[in-house]
Length: 491
Image (cartoon, rainbow, N blue to C red; front, side, top):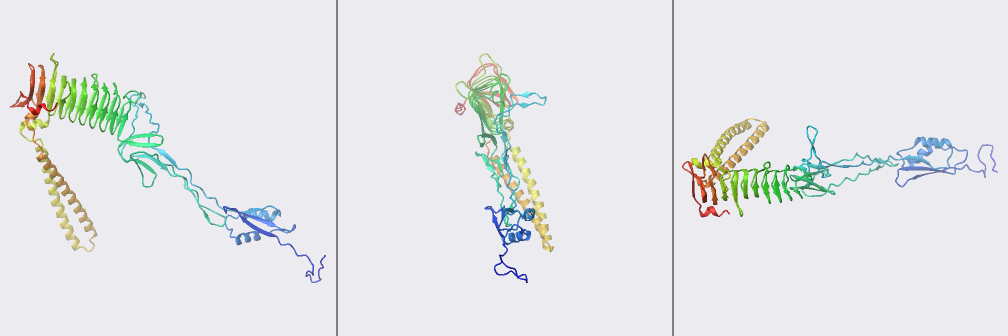
């Protein structure tokens, strides 16, 4: 046993007091710091300052668990490690969402009427879109937030993975990659994460209860028939591989029906361009171009240009037929004198009758527009000269400079308008002038008695059959004449 001297100094051989060993460990992700105490004498108390000082010495400055340290030091149970610091965990981004701005099931649903009933013929199966319409949109995730480890260094949050847009034709991803839009006018075609915008809508079978009515801004192809009571409307062309029975067809472009049209006294066909069908029976037909068929029977037809029968029969049998320029067929009327009315009526016809070109009024109108633009240019150039003078006299000419730029731009726009009008006049002046004889009814084989022919304000009802004859207007009456070789080349 060591001895103690009277002056309180430890004598030689006295045992020294043990010093505890403090160690700081940090987890692999640097988000947790641990304190381990070794060789602590039973009666000795660990000071808080010793712990915080050691942490500071080791660089552990963030997320100190001061309450844990205080309780640990006061509890005197140093056999277990102490969690003495915790970093701030990052807040990861939430989940982004991909939303579809169209129906993805591709199944038509009956349209509900105003009175609450359901229209099972309008299934709304076609989803039309315009160029630029947004088809899909990504909803950004809730923002994330960086954390800090126990050393105070930032810990980046985890970004979410953005959804992937469906692939397909005629779609366009926005610059920020958050929207998918239509690159053209068309209809939605979505199957198994493939999204196309099609310029043509194809009905693989019939237009019936399974498809409902079709209304599309582009071209429609029907590989079957269009059945009674249903309609097909198109902003482009309509092509029907089968037949049309008691249905409504309406197209901004052309209509082609492979087998034929039977209106069943209720169907109607309307086209901005030409209409072509093998036969047309008991139907109401209007077109902005020419009408072509092999047989036209008991129908009401109005064509802005010509009605041309071509094929094996090339016949018009009964009904009312009005054309802007010409009616052409092998056979017109029937042997039993079925009422058949043919009319040639158009503005071009009256212009030819009066000896004035149909384009004269258009040219006069364009010349008036040129006069207006010329007067506008004179006024603008006067204002421009005034602005130039003001600019020379003014010290601060920014306002006058801006005005001059605006005036010059308006002058250029007016000059371009005049150039456009002059090009249109040149085109109209070069257009061939129609003769009255160009507006006619031609029966290549026979026009039966009972047929009524009206050209302009003049008409004639045939009392006998006419063979290989052309009817046209001359000296205020409808007259007949022989066919020319040029008249026979159309069939």
